[in-house]
Image 1: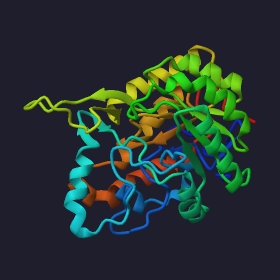
Image 2: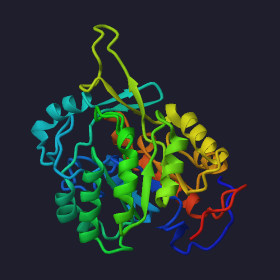
Image 3: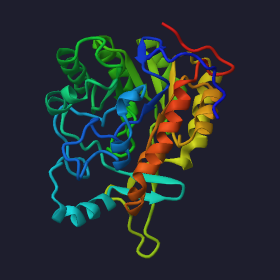
Amino acid sequence: MLRAKQVPDHGEVRLGDIVLRNRLVTSSSLLGYGVANSPLLPYGMSPVSLFVPLERFGAVTTRTLTVEPREGHFSTRDDYSLGELPGLLRRYGRVLRRTDGGWLNAFGWCNVGIEAYLRDYHPRTRGQRTIISLGGFSGEELVTLVDRVNAAVPAGDIAAVELNVSCPNVNVDLSTILDEVLAEAVPRSSHPVILKLSPDHDYVRSARAAAAAGVSALTAINTVKALRLDPRTGEPFLANRYGGLSGRAIKPIGLRVVSELREAGVTLPIIATGGVRTVDDCREYFWAGADAVSLGSAVWLASYPGYALAPLRALHVRRVLDAVRRWDTPPGRPVAAA
């Protein structure tokens, strides 16, 4: 079991300016927008999530949202019928593939757009603590997104906005706009801002720039840019050729990034993600220097037949959540405070 202090659960944890219900959050994209339109085919949400009370997490992070609806490499539709299921699974196979120790995805910021999210989804997730993930290709786009969240969501109603300036499968080197985003979008936000770091770029430099710009916390890490080829034909498995690798395979990379950030003197709160499945995974990240941990593809994704075991997988998630909720101060380092 997690070696935690047995303290009362007061219902919130402060990471600098960010207020979470506890130190376990969910990663972007795996739970869509925090609610499904169809209980039968919960497009955008892992079936495992239907058996877990999402309001008990420290926060639930949305799919990355852009200014306009974006098909990416998949589809924004969520009204598939049972008869369309075989075709839907084939499409999934071109944007999401299981690989050794993890998953490779290239959805490419497929989303309904910020206006549809704020109108159709956010009002239905008020019981959750939410981190709204935002993505764009310029400082101007991120400013627009921040302004729209400011206008629709009162300060304090969500945990934070997360700026995704590190996605590896949108075919743009987003690191080139980081300084512009930090200078223009961060100061405008009425909500705490989290910067999501890429392990493929200079994350220490990015973290230091984020701290100087007034960012409240870091997410470490985004997926790792990767490639798989069909060994029979040489064709890429994914429609985008390259995708983002997540899951157990990247946990050692995530641990390294968190540790190196702390060794470099970065003091911002860190939400660690990458291969987190068990209580032991959480403990490793806390010891590396994280203040909170995030459950991603290692928990929420399974082979399609494997989703028949979703209720059992959900019981495991609940046990991890209960253990982390009892966690007080990660050993060896103080928790960032307001």
